[in-house]
Image 1 (cartoon, rainbow, N blue to C red):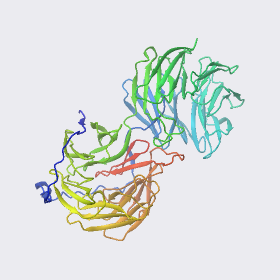
Image 2: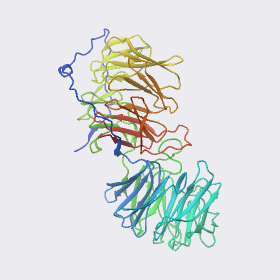
Image 3: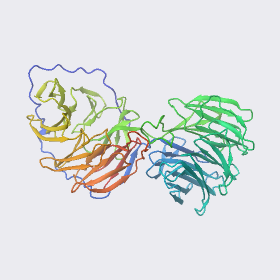
Amino acid sequence: MRPVRFAVVLALALLGACKEEAPLPAPSPDDEKPAEQVPPVSSAAPFQPCGAIGAGALAASALSPDGSVLAVATLSGQLVLYQTADGSRLQTLWELPGQQVRVVFSEDGSLLVAANQTQTRIWRYPDLTPVRTFDLPHSHRTTALALSPDGAFLATGGFDTAGSETASVRIWSVEDGSLRGSLQRSYEQIVQSLAFSPDGASLAVATHHFVFVVSAADASGHKAFPELSGGQLGWSKDGSLLASGGKVARLDTGALVKDLELSTTRDASAFSPDGLLYADALGPEVTVYRVADWSKVRTFTEPNASYVSRLSFSQDSTQLVVDLGVSAFWCNGVGQLCGPWGNEVRIHPVLDLATARTVSLGPVMRDQVVFSPDGSLLAGTGNGVMGIWRTRDLHQVATSNISSPGYLQFSSDQSRLRANNVIYDTATGKGLQAFQGQALSPDFKISAGREDDRIRLRNVITNEPVKTFEVDAYVIGFSPDGRFLAITNYDSRNRIQLLDVADGTVRHAFELDFNQGGSRLDYSPDGRWVTLTAPYDGFASTEVRGLGTAFSRSLPASFAAVFSPDSTVLATGGVEPEVRILTTTDFRLRERLVGHGTYLGGEQWPRAIVGAAFARTGQLATLGADRTVRFWCSN
């Protein structure tokens, strides 16, 4: 099925306001029919992962020895296998919370190894039988991984306590999991890269400031290379040269055979297995050299990219693999520490570096997620534009050029979709109507907005005003049944009121301190509660207030809080990389859903879960700061 294409409506003239207010639109025959009473889907069973859109930022990739499969590790905690021929996803092999660090195949193709911050796993390949798991090879965080050429030893780098300035390297036996040797480096926080020599006898270690080589048998000995520093490590085929940061040094003397052309250190560098070529990258620019005389073979810039995070060659040296990812040391998928952000791998034939096959990790999901009324569709922002996905198979059924819509809403009959202040036909993608105001009723007949220091309701089709409420406030939105309009104003305290749409009477009012709740509202389907959440403030509590009762409960800060269709649970998400499921009998924690990537403590405004929505079917969708949407099912 060809996806529906939505296009931005560039010019939709709004009708002028009439002098006299018109009556509310008459109900259609369908509106007068009693709604079919369908029991809500139960959320009594524990929630389980049941799908994802997007894989998040790329941490590292590895090409299988035969070149047919690309293994990709992401910062959202996914390890995914792709078919290199067409870029199709073969399998999500391993999903664990926390940033993935590295993935690697053994040279003979019999093993696949991957690590995240807290665990390293080994599988037989290609049958993917688990071989061994290393839990907490470093007590706090693993940052680097390498496998010896014969697959007998595994090296990990990391640190054991938060904020530690002592980096550690450990060498493990793959056969029995025993520790063969370890070393520590003071005044270093990060082991950036590890690499075994081609003969397996030595292990090169790159920290943020230093590069040194130790014995691969037990981590003994210590030969420093003061001319090298940081970045991806690489050995020449004969083991006589060692590369890091865009410089190449002789192993025996430490003398440089290739220096930097510019003063900026390269993050990515690699030798081809046949020993003939060397490549490094600065920003999006990749340069390939002939090792024999260090002449340039070709320099090219990756289009639509800002950063090459890693380079590697295929085992037969015929392909150059370029990771357009992020620094797994500093980035969590969002925030100031990420810098350039990417989620593609490009594979270039060495004989024709101008061409490439691209493996994309899927759409980059941001901003918000909204289910259609029957739960069959999900609207959201992927790769910066609005899209619609079918929930039964997560296939994208609609595309658009509507850039980062601030608001998405399906009509109650699902035939129309609001994106910002334009209404579209869901089936064709055609723009139908622009409207004035900040809120739209569930049936898409009435809009509401702040005009001339008062609240005005308008007929969407004619744009005629139908009601004016003499209150100076900002509009939040309509309740799901269209009976109430939520408004907010601030006068030493944040005041949120629910107006009766019929006559403007204040039916419910809530006063909040500056660190309580916010302007994002979610109503329980049974009409008993409303949650008030601050979507951009990780420090304000989430407030639960009773509708018609004096019930009040303060919950930990979150960016999203949504009720299940049967109103028995409340799902919240905030700074921590977990979705909290609370029972509405007492609003105590029932379970934690773990799967989104973690945040970094150094972020000024850390976030982990930034959006959530329940479908009528009981399916829960959560949007992470790792730029993925996860689905959770309770039945």
